[in-house]
Each structure stands twice: as structure tokens, then as C-alpha cells.
Amino acid sequence: DGEYVRDIEVYGAVIALNVNIKIYGLDVAHDVPYRHPNPNSRTREVYLIRYDTPPSEHYREYRPLE
Picture 1 (cartoon, one colour):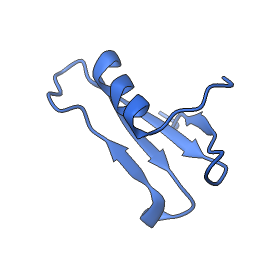
Picture 2 (picture 1 turned 90 degrees about the vertical axis):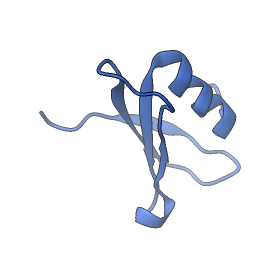
Picture 3 (picture 1 turned 45 degrees about the vertical axis):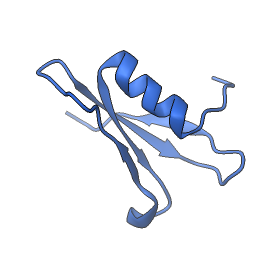
């Protein structure tokens, strides 16, 4: 919380945490997927919602109902 990130930090998290991250924007055209380059059976899916506009983008985790 309270930290600002750009594409490079999100991609770093993908690598470091072994996750795929999908960021949902205002509509499908603004959704951005970040895929792990070498996923394996332990690679998890993480979903974020962008709720502000540049340059001050903020994100919240989205957890789909299981």
C-alpha cells in the first residue's frame, strides 16, 4: 500500500513471485496481462483492478468467487 509501480516493477513481481498478473482497466482495451515467461504448475494467477487514471494509477486485488 502507498507504493507506486510501473510496468517494470509489475513484471519484476511476475518473475520474483512466480505469478501471472492481469490488470483490469476501464474496459477490455485497457486490460493488461503480464505473463511469466516460464510458467510451471506452481504459477498462480493474480488479478488487479486499476481504479485511477495516469499518472497516479492505483490498484486493488480482485479475487474471483471460487
